[in-house]
Amino acid sequence: MKKFLSNLRGERGAVNMGGILLMGIGMVFLAVGFIMFPIVTTATDSLLAYAFATNAAIVAACFTGFTAVTGITPLLILIGYVSASVFSMYLGMKITKGSGSSKLDLGTMLLLGVSLIFIAIGLIILPVALDGISTVWHGAGTGINAAYVGLEPILIVTPLLILISFISAAVMSGYFGIKRAGQTTDV
Image (cartoon, rainbow, N blue to C red; front, side, top):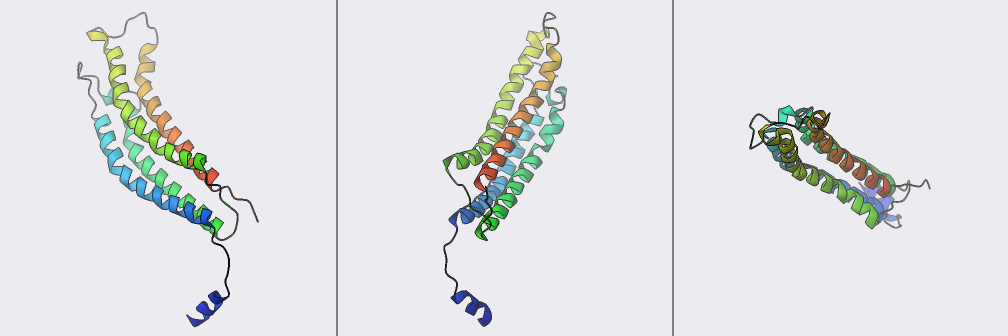
């Protein structure tokens, strides 16, 4: 212990705040991931239990691939936030050790925050989209008008596309936010 303390006595220098902030962002990602997990699970449970009010035969399982992707969404979001946490903490450690510098500005912080917004908007918009799609599909009890050739297959896959697009947008904005925050230049 004495040897360790004697080695530190001669140390002088500046603390790289960018690296410390990046490690703090990693801890925030970890906390947000575990905070959002039960919220996302509840939202996806209600999506999986979806039944159209006017025609109970139209349920979530009627939409192509929707139940499988909805079922794995909470796990994807949790793994995404844990991965973002580990990656930003790694970059923070790398920067703190002197392997580069960080670029933390308002644009970077917005990119990191927008990933949360995309997930929230996706889970809020999906029930509304399901009702709208079901209304067109049901067609007041008569089904889709025969004049709309090819509309039914597109309607059936649309909820899946909406969910995947919002998850992809969240992943991309989070990735580019972390990448931009941890831009390192070799010293």
